[in-house]
Each structure stands twice: as structure tokens, then as C-alpha cells.
Image 1 (cartoon, helix red, strand yellow):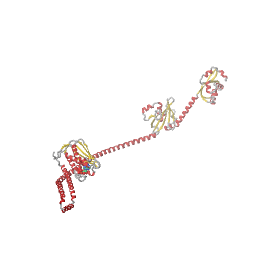
Image 2 (tube, helix red, strand yellow):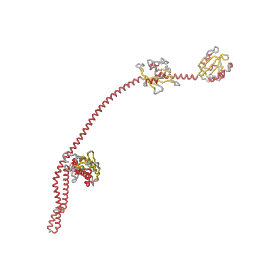
Image 3 (cartoon, rainbow, N blue to C red):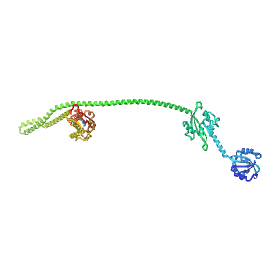
Length: 602
Ligand code: ADP
């Protein structure tokens, strides 16, 4: 234990121990008093401290300096000193302390009072900060991107080499000043980093729009601007600047960092591109206008051509129609002429044949009677033959044999029957011829008539012809009374019905459909069959007089010719359409009112 301790007032010890900072007293040698806080700081127990010289706490260079400085302090008191120094703890660890040394008079003796504060943590933090700052400075300095940093007072703290190179001003003349504007402008005005620090950037954006100056889309709080600086380089330069605020832990802006990128080449390329695009657009617009003009002309041309074509087509249709009508008229003319001349011929022939056939017929009838009587006489002779002398019987037998009497007797009746049938046929032809020639000269009155009644009665009369061959289906529409010579029309219907029935093939039963209807002032009648039909090469000939495909004795070829004439006389029309194997349709159209023929007796 140090003897001097006893020289200190006892109440000092608890007082010293109550202090949180380390304190010690010495009088140039051994430590007279060291409190618990010093024990904790140095790691020495209070007893160990009480045996130590006060400078032993300090490592050699500091220890020597302190000893030297404080030597003689007790003899001539000095003002209080405040040092930052280090102590070495019992475990050999070095700790930074702040030590105030003052002269005190304790127990009537000059005494040195040391108060020691552990500042190791602070010092470490400061060192770390310094190092971080240096690192940051290095990062900024060695970065290839021109970068500058200003602090909250707008004072430049960093101006890296790239910055100096691009902007042509050295860091020495810039760092520590507020002259960052000098690198960009001729007169003082804030750069992007200044606007961030002063917090006026959003106002600027509002004021000048966001065309060049805008918020960064990548970094929060950062802003970017593309500007042309006419005073940079020989012909001015385009710079793309990005700046972001630097904030302390509390989030307060303590500066701003700004990076720059020379985008002059890009801008030139963009401008050239834009110019090219504008030129291209102009060319396209011109071409488009030329094209649309050409298109309009073409469309006009097409319109004109289409109109001309339509007109041509219309003319063509009209011409075709006219031609058709001409052909029809021509056909009708031919047909009428044919009919007229054939009518005359038929009338002549019928007249010429009618007389001879009349007496041939009556002679045959007389012959038949005479023959019956003659044969009766022969029979009587034969019965009396037995009573004749043999020579007479032989002569008769020889004569009979020569004449083949048995055969003659048989054949003579047949010959007369065939002749009767032949004259009957001739009579029918004559009748047809007379009907045909009379068709044009009928004196029957023109009367409004019910064609349905006409059709029904004709079907009745023709039923013998039809009933074994086909069924009749009536599909009658509404018909007005038609002014006509009904018996003549009935003759037409009869021809059509008989033809339809005869067109049915033997192996199956057919159907004849009778349809009627009206349209406006016209009525129509259709007689349709599903018979064997008419080959296309014959259809144009069926109305020709004497055209027939029927076997001899079955057809005269006058039915349709006669019908054609009757319908024509009624100012109507008769047409036929046919599909071989499927059937034939005859269609008659008639005016409901008979237009009076010039010179016709009403
Ligand atoms: P015909 O009946 O005496 O032959 P038509 O003048 O009435 O004389 O007919 C002329 C020809 O027209 C007939 O021989 C026949 O070839 C044809 N024909 C008429 N009507 C029909 C029909 N419905 N089906 C098939 N052929 C028909």
C-alpha cells in the first residue's frame, strides 16, 4: 500500500467511487487514488493500481510524453490539459481515452488529478467513418463515370477525374467551392444536384415540364436531365445527368451526388435519325398522296368503265331480248305461215279425199253385204251339189281347187274387215285435217268460260284413254272466267291429255298433273306428266304439222300443230319443256280477255 494514501482525506474514496468516469490522483509517482471506474477501464484491481506508477498505465511513447510533460507540474502548477491518448489495460488491450489533467491541492499537498474518459468506441466509429469516407472518395474518384458530390451547403466535396476530364476543370479548383456551375454555364445558376439539395426540383419540373428534366424511373428520389451545353467543347455538348440526394440516418438531405454522361454522339445520331425519319415520312406522305391520287383516278376510271360496261350489258340484254322476241316472232310467223298453208292444203286434201273415201267406204259396206249374200248363195249351191251329176260335181270341185275356194272364202271376210279399218283410219285423218283447217275459221262465239269446267269435262271424255295409263292430279288455282272458244280449247286439252297418257311407259303407271293459276290479266294452265319425255333434238319439232314419233296408225302429227294454232288464235302461248326419262310439261298462257282481232265479228 502507498503511504501517501493515508495522507488523503478518507471521505475522498467513497466520493471518487461514486463517479462514473475514471479518476486518479498522483503526486508524480505512485497512484494515490484510483476509483472503481478506473479499475473497470484498466482491468487492474484497486490494490494493483495502488501499487502502480501512474504512467505505467500508458504505452511507451505516450507514457514518456506524459511523464515529460507533467514533470515539474507539482512544483509549478499549470492550467488543466485535455488530451486524447491511449492506455494499455491489464490484458494488454489498447483503449483510447480522453484525459484531463489538473493541479489540485488535496490535504495541503499539491496533487495531480486525472479524469479519464473511455473514448475508444467513438474513436473507432470516427476511424470507420473516415475509412468509409476515404473508400467512397476512392470509388468516386476512380469511377469512369464523371461524378460530383455536393454537401448540404452546395459546396463541392467530390469532383472525380472523369469529371475533370470531360468538363475540363480540375478537382483542385472546384472541391471546397460552390462553383460547380462554372463547368456548365457562363453565369451562376444551380445544377441538378443543387436543385435536389435545395428541394426545388419538383417546382422546376412543374415549371418547365418533364420533357428534359424528369424523375428517374429506376431510382427513387433521383432525377435525370438531358441538356445541351453550348459552351462545352468546341461545338457544345449534350450531357445526360442523373442526380440523387444523399441522406443522413434521419433521412435529411445532406448533399447530392450527380453523374454525367456525354450523349453528344447519341444525340447527333438521334437527330440524324429523326431527320431521316422526317424525310422518310415526307417521302411516304408524298408517295401516299400520289398513290391515293392514282387510286382515285383508277377508281374513277373503273367507275367509268363499270358504267360503260353496265350500259353495254344493258344494251346487250336489250339486244338479246329483242333478238329473242324477233326469233320468237319469226318462229311464230313461220309456224303461222306453215299452219296457214298446211291448213289450206289440209282443207284441200280433206275435201279431195272425203268424197272418194265416202264412196269407197259405202262400196265396201255394200261389198260386205253382197259378199254375205253371195256366200249364202254358194252355201245353197254346196248343199245341192250332191244332186248334181258326177261330171258336174268334178268340174265344180276342180274349179274350187284351182281357185283355192276354202282359202278365198276365209280371206275375203278378213280383206273386207281390213279395208273397213283402213277407210276408218283415212276417215280419221280426213277428220283431223278438217279440224285442223277449220281451227282458223271456227265460227264459235267468244264467251267467258270456266276453264276448270272445260278441263274437267275433257278429262271425262278422255278417261278411257287415260285410266289404264295414269292417275290424274288436279292442282287448280284461282282462275277468272276466260273469254274464249271453249270447245276449241277443250280440243287442245284433249290433245295434251291423250299425248301425256300415251307418253307413259308400259311398265309403270304414271301421273298427270293439271295445274292452273293466274297472274294479272293472264291465266295459265300446265299439263305435266312423268312419262318418257322428249329428246332435246326433237322438242323444237313437236308443233310441226305431221311430226309424230308414234307408230303408224297411232298418230297423225297434227294434234300439237292444231293446238298451237288454237292457242295462237286466243292470243296466247303454248310451250313445252321436257326431260327425257322424267317427263314433259306443256304450259299454256292466255289473256283473260280476248282482244278483238281487226275485222273479227264479235
Ligand atoms: P301425234 O300425237 O299424232 O303424234 P302430236 O302433234 O300430238 O301428234 O304430237 C307430236 C309428237 O310430239 C308426238 O308424236 C310425240 O313424239 C310428241 N309428244 C307430244 N306430247 C308428248 C308428251 N306428253 N310426251 C312425250 N312426247 C310427246
